[in-house]
Image 1 (cartoon, helix red, strand yellow):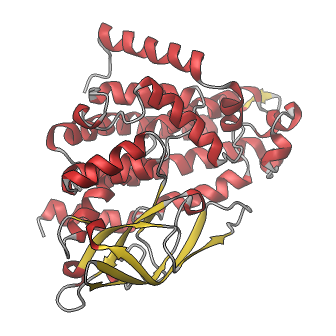
Image 2 (spheres, rainbow, N blue to C red):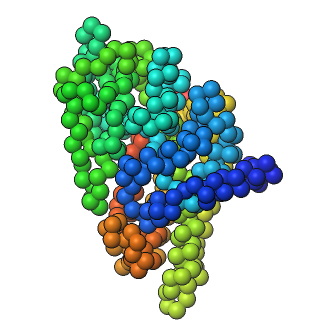
Image 3 (cartoon, rainbow, N blue to C red):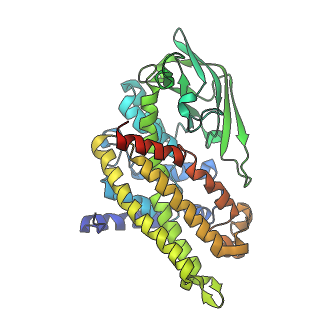
Length: 395
């Protein structure tokens, strides 16, 4: 596939660059550049700026408030946003639940929830993984029992990313215990203010609070919050995970990280010469760059499939595998280049401190440790390879 762009697409790139230069707040871009922890108000701020422009839901169809952009335009926007150090758009409402409601939700659910995702009224988190059901998601045990016009939910979810900021959670729950495990799962929307819900923080190895565990004790949820039909949640889950895995690939962020690693290698000296001139290090960079160029083409193909067919297929596992491996490889290259300067600095110490930022602006131990999760969440890369094999062999 030729990655050269048309005049119209280059004009669109210029439009995106101008918008980012004029509207991306400097303090937000600086916080992203140094790896500072974004607070909810930071994410809400950028969310609102994009929504005012009409560019927030760039993956949605026009009829639901989307942009109508082509796959190439989506790729360009993601690339330029990453290059400008824009905060990543929180995916749970926009890239995950939104497409689910557009395909499986009732008209009432679409009319109520989709505008609230766009204007920031509702912030969502994902209730999929459980202590005994991570990559083997079909083993989930959180139960939802029908009681009149309500479901009563009991169970536990874990690794709930940004749950501390959310108002709502979309959950996979077990509504039938006999038959194949996949055939007894339903997809339901839960207000986190409902009595019986407890959210507990999980502290990560680098000290951050990004994920949580969520406990449900006799939580009563209106039956109207069920999306699609009862026991069809596995179909919805696979649809959502296709969008999630495409999002996890993070092509634009890897392209930005590659530029930063190259810049770091040019200014870092080893034996009196720039590290970029070291044959072994240069070969490692070249290997990653070749893989990234191939993934860019694959990403465009997936975006086209999602736009023309309504959902990416199992081949999104390719993006998930390659995208996460590339991002981890870039983290590792930066760590090697930084040497002792890769030691973690608290983000609040780095913010506004030019000396620390210069030492650790590309990577530090906190980033390295945190990004080890990339090849695990969203379905571990080992599971993704199984998915691809079954799809190829039509098993």
